[in-house]
Length: 241
Length: 143
Length: 183
Image (tube, rainbow over all chains, first blue to last red; front, side):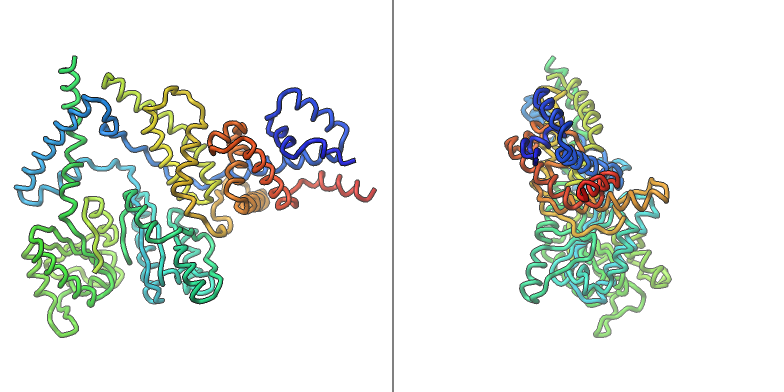
């Protein structure tokens, strides 16, 4: 009676995903026409597949960043490129030397010569480790001020608020004095992310003996400090507020 | 063929290379002092900067202030001992230290920009200024 | 190596890789449920792919190559970042008509929550198969696991999802079942 045992679950999934040989497929079709239970099971598998597909059809818009230029130095196996490295480095060094001998006002100008294209996205990590309520208010004021500034100047920006140590209080579901405000900010600014440090969460749970529950939409990172270093390597600006 | 090859590369590459070299070499010598909490932090910062310059006279220092960090750069501001901030600010400014004040903060606190010390320069946003300087290779310090 | 063809290939590669951006983003989003993280992941993947494209013998190599870079990036960096429960309706765009909106949104939200409950391995397999339409062989290549593992993870994933999403079954199917039980 339980005909679906004739085929393993893996086999039926493979049928649904068209991963069987024509002969195997034919076998399943024959059984399907005779077995309602099997047919319903296969139907359900197809439904699940369709639901998964549907769930990611519409997505929040990604910010579109151009790919970085491939720098020539990465193809150093080319001997000529190697030679040019030496020549250009020398030219660069010589120019830097001459810049160093002129008033410092000229040096910054040289630095911005290779200015970023106008599509550049500002990336800012704000580090919060102080948990006093008054301070947390300042943090949110500054973050909101920043997001508004970027929006008003039509500058694309990604801002991450990373909390560790007592700063975690900002993001605790039952303790945060600003849960509503944070929810509002998350809704209003899609490129703003609040991040909690797992190490701090573990410490809170150990020392306070409570289960830590975070506000919705908060991202957890293994270690706040490690996240700060990662972002630093990725070229993010860093601020402590 | 090789000469032509080299010629092409030499003309193309210096434009990409020089900024990288210059920024790499100069990055170690430029620092932001970020002051936003209040006068106590400002006092610490001014002391740290004085020591920093004593150790490294060539370092380029920019003090960026916003929120409660702007207070010490206003006319008549004094520390908790009654000493005016204008004195150390003028001294450090004479040594090349720059002081920048956040316009958004002044507007929010309803402070007339003219009340800022003459050494202080206005910037549209203190936080954005910090990020911009980092992009230019400045290191970040929080006193 | 002629410098002009070298520069030209780079431009072509970049353009070709850019075409993959949205599809990569869809998978990255399904894995992280965060637009910002997914964007990071895709950017890193494309940058790595561009650097490696010099090593690629066949410029028309299948997508599996690209997605295996995505998978490695995910393992290296993004597994450490995971989102807690999602903000209600915040991650959804609003292209639907008002009447359809609430039920469609609800379904999408439920499905995403269910997928978030899967183990990482199960989530990766089921999304690569169901969203990207990859064959089991390709998924095995991308995730660097035996094909048997792909099949068993997929099986378990769909069973879990089936249970969690049972109430989303279309009415006709459910009625049919009830009739049979009464019999």
